[in-house]
Image (cartoon, rainbow, N blue to C red):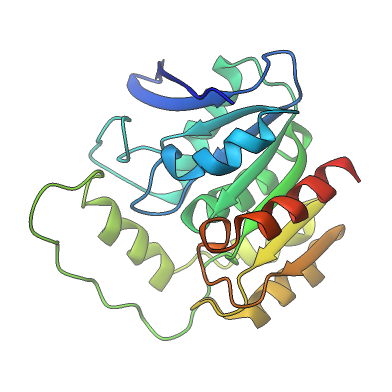
Length: 229
């Protein structure tokens, strides 16, 4: 399945996205993890593009999208709204991994009428636990803006409690996929699945945090089953 790479201007910023599938097919938007890009979805997009119009977005500061002065989950949520409007996506399914999963929760809470189905890969909304230490910047060039890291980690360390309180407002059918042997506490994914009214939790044991890399067949089986149910 061919993957097309395009750019679009949104709210004064340039965003790059990867598209697969027929433009008349049901739309599915995919959001990547911190430090990754839309390209990280290519193996998933190649399969889902057979039945869906899959749009994988480079979020601000990542891949081919603009580097900006400020980064936050809320700004990425706004970016997604601008993207969906620009692509004329009335209602669409949304799939997010890690950082992209948190953006997906926020978007689904704020604009529930826009989301057909929600898929979140191995992340709950940020929660207060032991603080995450800020890492040092690696040497050499990076495929993303390093400033994203401290900005997002700050929000992970000081999360907005509303993000959990509003999980009950996510009304569309939801699938949470856990990686089992991940660094993410899987009991938190269980809590999420109990708070979202219409939510299914699928755990792919021994997959780790990057479920769609570590066990692509099981990930795709769960996603495809959910999308057609």
